Image (tube, rainbow, N blue to C red; front, side, top):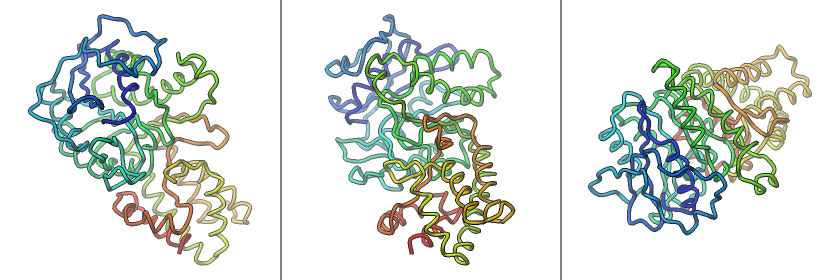
Length: 389
């Protein structure tokens, strides 16, 4: 989208061109730069020039798009709204480069769950576009993906704050796997040169039906290794390592985690009605958990800290409240294909969920979250209402 990420987009495109489309797959990108009148769609081939790993975003600040190895995809006009452009990209890719299996990567700014799509809302979905003052809401993204003739086997969010319970649940009924970060994501994003090379190797060494499963296990580790040993020079060396990435099996998420979470919500709400002292304890645990800019907190850390708090409060390990908290934590782990987090001390798993910090915060966002599949199927609004009456 048209925003401040243009240098990083050009940087990543150079990385993608160092590998390009191969015999077994095509790479098709939609690019909307601030100095373009509209989005352009390209099939990416292999560049004749080697990728220079010593370049930084500064080298791309005043550099135009290098059209080497880019084949323009015919378009009959591009809509100014991010949601329409995204839909046009997917349809054009399937029309001109049809495939039996697809992987969709969403690259840009991300803010987590939202049913709305306006840039003035700091929690508004993803792909924020400054020229149209709009963004792509999660509900619209779901609608677009459901409309595709070939359902993506893998949804990757190369964006901030997208690996949340609310976002994951929205796609869990029709997409097998999702990869992303629950935290603020490094502008550099995924290391696409290594990403595509590993994908090509996986494609060559796997049965077609196994490719997305095997590849989804490798992406979090690929990102971790890049963060620890990247070629960003002294800038990376002086910065503390932050971030996280996870790959989630959405079928396990839907069949195991969501029912367990619903039972956990029900027993927690009924327990708080009998023992009101649980409410300040739950707020305390919320405060101890890693918190992200969109008010989401790390789900695995929260559940484990809550189990510790319940033991402190005298809830024996065989009580329904404790047992269902433990089961929910186990179901979360069961749904994870792989993950990493530099927040090792908090047992983070790189999946978050929204837990408001105040009554005003909850009242401001409640109507939006009630539209999410996660809220509708787990009843978690009842828990938030009990904590912030």
